[in-house]
Image 1 (cartoon, rainbow, N blue to C red):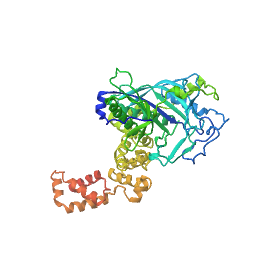
Image 2: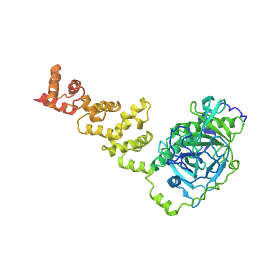
Image 3: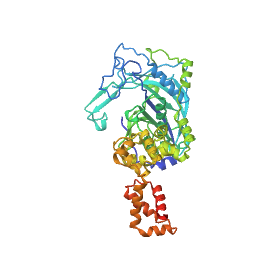
Image 4: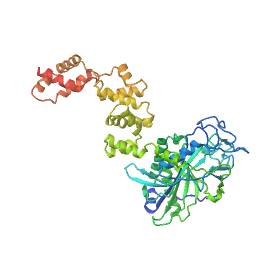
Length: 503
């Protein structure tokens, strides 16, 4: 396929000032079932290539599919969580196309009769703005295998010496969630797209239907972008950037496509309806293939699978058993914890909500948990380029740390040293306090010795304090803290200094 080179990109701010972007997002989630969608092959991440297969996975002649009930249940629960209608009857179809990772030469999917349809989900942006995204459908299908192109640039087919196919992934259950056109996002289109995918990821995890680890490909997004002159104009020609697997990449892909398409239109050219590949290295996209329409796949009903007619009582049972969904949970915790709106948004955006909730459950206050996770631990995570949840410390250990502070056994300064010890693998906060000898000096005799030494070194301070000038007392406290390696209780030292001077 010959493609016209893209003119120089239009600055993003200029592009969204002159064009109205429209989004459409297709999210695929791998379901966490024990076996595949249509056969008993196990679902195991990282297994040796082509070891998790059966004749059905490999598309061998005469092999017949058998539907996975657990996958259907997960699909219904996803549909319910997205406020969808659950179909009284639906069926599978054959989506016909040839590619080496589809051994049957067709994908078993759902076409005109999806299991869930006509839903919506509210997406909250970082500043608290809520955008409602309408869901057209959520349908079941099977995943394809994985091609590895050897010798080509950046793993691409072009220039490869040979290709390998691993069918372990072929047949893993998927649910694909398709939005209706997302309108009115303007300059915030990239942010809305990323927030939408994050919202779905959180729902999948809450439902327990998938590990939803994007770095493993459990959740993948196909991002459709088009531009039109104004919100009143007809929809423009869209492109579909395939298999984007991080929130940051979703944002960057939308941003690049808006700038690229604006440049194409400014040059008097037409946007081509095509799939595109996203490149992590520089945030650009490149052409894939001209986008096929439904008729190109020659869909027809799958003759080896009967229609699915979920019992209404079962659907209602699943509805009543849904867990508290992320948005409702955030609202509840916001009220219970008493955080300011900005504080709660910071907690959510930092990915600290689960960590703080678990710390509170382990025995500390919301304010204390927030202080550690959003303060010292967030600083350490940022400086080490580590996700907060990946730091080598548990919520229970954070709660124990604060309990030591509350009991007066350590102060905040010592607590930071204890935290460093826990992160270094020295054990629990109790272990670190004991091993490093960090407990606050509470023996008045020891403190008085240090106070007497400080007053003797600065005899004029006692007279100033007696005369009512309490400012110099800080110098005595500082000297005592130094003498005790920061392990003195500053409040108690102040009390003892006043007692000593007035004696």
